[in-house]
Length: 238
Image 1 (cartoon, rainbow, N blue to C red):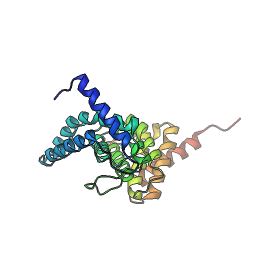
Image 2 (tube, helix red, strand yellow):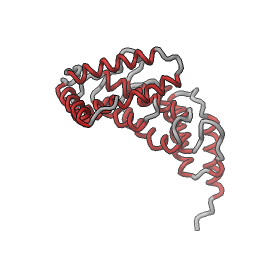
Image 3 (cartoon, rainbow, N blue to C red):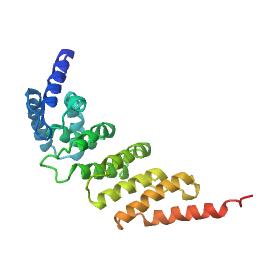
Image 4 (cartoon, rainbow, N blue to C red):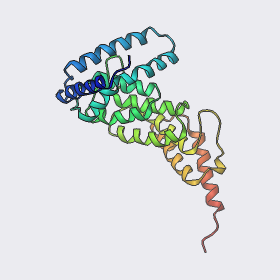
């Protein structure tokens, strides 16, 4: 149901009051949070009734605007309360391909040590590393999005504990983004600019160091060969 400007203003005002009053580490209180939990429970119920993953994602895209007032208020005035609405919606934004919005939310969740809801069996850091890396490798992100966003994910999760395999996948995804390798098809290593070679190689080597079954050995060999050939072809210094 479309809200009037006055209703949206009231909703945002109540949300700001609720998130600002939440004790650090405690759960937000107040009418806005209680209504948000009721809405979240209804949306979860509706998602549970959908079998198709594709249709679940489309349903999340339809639900997400209804949480904007709460998310914006939390980012503006939140004190770090353990907020199941915020963390659930963060994951839904990733699922829906709203990567920029998820990255807007992630630093707040990390800074305040928010815990993932009970239905998730991974930590916040692992979710971010795993989902962003997987989205890039599967082609759900453009190469430009991956080059822009994956370094942000690496930076904000650097101090968080996560499985080496997940972090290796993220470095692999970033390495592939730098060298322009898409989910399907190969790349012309011989025509690749040297800065891209160096950046890609650095990330793929890091991925291999973290997990030797990450599947980048052939790419590393080709990139190293490209660097050697470039060095051999360079004219002697005067």
